Length: 416
Ligand code: FES
Ligand SMILES: [Fe+2]
Image (cartoon, rainbow, N blue to C red; front, side, top):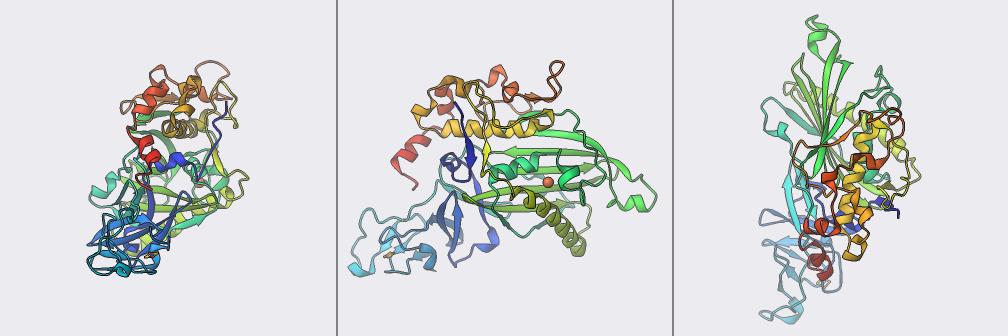
């Protein structure tokens, strides 16, 4: 049995927090956004960000064409008014004081909230909290957003690309990959919340360190890279140069809008720029160049979904090596997400789930993969099931317990 590929429209992705806009973009002027092939409207009602399906319950007109009045969203077509709860408070054609029909509600998602300067939307109960950004609370850090990019590449492949380190000397030969060695040293992927993290240490050139020009430190310095992933598409990379006491962090979050459309939200957070706007703008420009190098290749892929881990002992679609341990962990986490969100009959074949851990089932720091070859010869071809630890094995029943009520929510159409 093959699980298939995870496209931007996979229904399992409803069980996740997704960035849909920057907070500054959401005002009392309704704004239309796309997520998982669906249209939503965002607006501030009484100061709070509110989201509804972008369809009026009356004649399905786009609510994003309406306006906000006295803390309510007013449909542009016949003037029906909706409170932040979605309740219809007035139907002009019925006359004043006549109650609205019972089904006249604007459809709200499971949740909408603001964090890290983004508006996040979860259509159904999410499997993971919004990713942390510890640097936001640390002194001395400056931050800036890259312009939101829109690409035809799918979110799953872009997340994989962010976690992939072997591509740096090839795709980024003109920027961050210049002079980097091609060998990826073994590293360990460890559980972190519902996702995972891994660390790498390398000696790299650090020309941005002012101490190098001043002759205080050598050009080549130790760099510690910590990658953090939370499902479905929330990623963070912290780059630390201990000798220069510099930390650069990148928050990278993806918005699967449509089958061939993904929004890329990238925030850089650095403590080496001293609040200098010109240096911050320069850093944004450099990061944008790096991102464009990635997108130029990702947009040429002829697949529009991330291959998941096949069940039933089937061969994976891709060939993985030890350097791909993080990518395999990503595929496992998303395969688990799909298994958890699937309706009950699809969960029946136990072997398919046996290789897919229930996200969040491990304790933080517990080892879930190891890129050191377990035996001679295993370093060249990495079977995906190498990462299934006995403690990870989830029965269909256990997997379903993790998101109580999720199926019922979907079946009952509560949110949508
Ligand atoms: S379609 Fe919205 S009020 Fe009629
Ligand atoms: Fe890249």
